[in-house]
Image: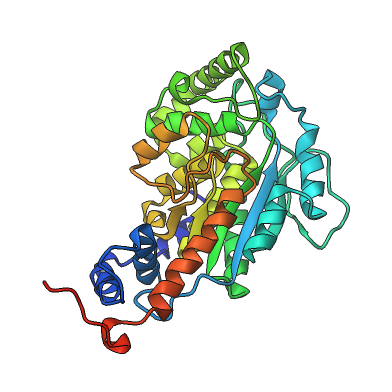
Length: 357
């Protein structure tokens, strides 16, 4: 493993779960029946642990990174959209016209758009766009590794640097978002490699495939797993990410690792972002305590993924857009949970009688 990457991982402090009891004691002393705010209480307690027991809890400022990259596997016919849509959507993000732009504005969340691996050279300069291209796309995973180990590590370090910059700007929470035509295909391959799942069980329509086209996508993923089998079986999670992933997926995995390094809560978006989280978790298990799955993707295989991860998403809205949209929505819930913990009166403060034991 790259020395710089190893030093970041070694510097990550696991979340102190022993603080959960103190968090719950405070929540139980607020003017409500115990547990009556459901998962908001769970969120608040986890945020308290991430904060190391410091109060008040803070989620803001919050920032979503929508990271873009192209995939060589697009040539295998696994998406109904042409590959140039990746580049077109990056311009749409920069100009404020996409779903993630609207939801970030609505939620009061900062948005940064990142070209980590798009085809076609630099974009025109734009204040809303971070241009740090690691490479122009990947090779087809159905024919060999998507990228070299060096390229993958550069993408991981890019994500770590984005988290570092967010922390320097005072952010307390970051969110993952993606853009890359065909990126449900490498994401599915990563789930199969990391979690032992079968492509036939978790491959979905992505951007709109149906019938025979989905079956073809399954076969492409099977070929990818077979041609890269020696790498996967060696058990190195970074090498597996390089073989089966994408530049934006590796960058998002680095963002997760970097968020943990700087003690930031990290909100994970849907199908692609959860693949990035899975890679980050395999590389560094301690990141898990900092991460929140924002929503249950409508991709049909996502239920099997979260079962394998033993995780529970916050929202069930039938979303499957990506871009970080679920993360922007979930950040409001996290803000609400922090405010409940910080601002709600205790029984003693309010002069309200507690329930009998």
